[in-house]
Image 1 (tube, rainbow, N blue to C red):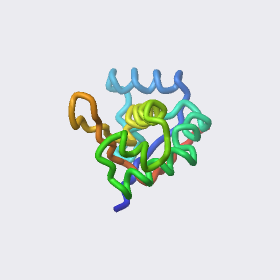
Image 2: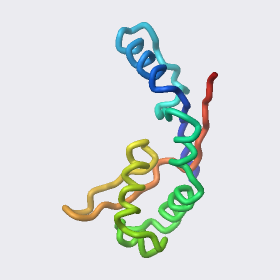
Image 3: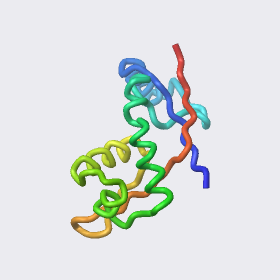
Image 4: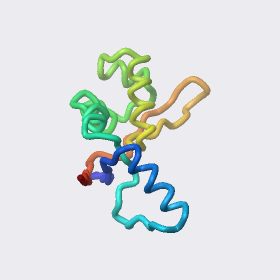
Length: 119
């Protein structure tokens, strides 16, 4: 199933101005406006690198029940994998569902991305 997410590129300074304008009621975001913002195309490219998109594909297709199982499926080190998954979760691309005190289940929230870039 296709799960789309709108993302955008906006400098930190512009993002701060936008957030303040929203808080003051001076700006109302469009319904189709991105909810997730990256500071640069480079940061967007790093987060959605080939390796990370492959990781998302494995999670979506194989539905691992833990980060350890995902490590086995991908051959990636658990600590590196955990760091990557927490970064992806910070952007709202994956959920890390608590299975137990020590285990998280990775779940993909977005499989397709629509990018909005201004000048």
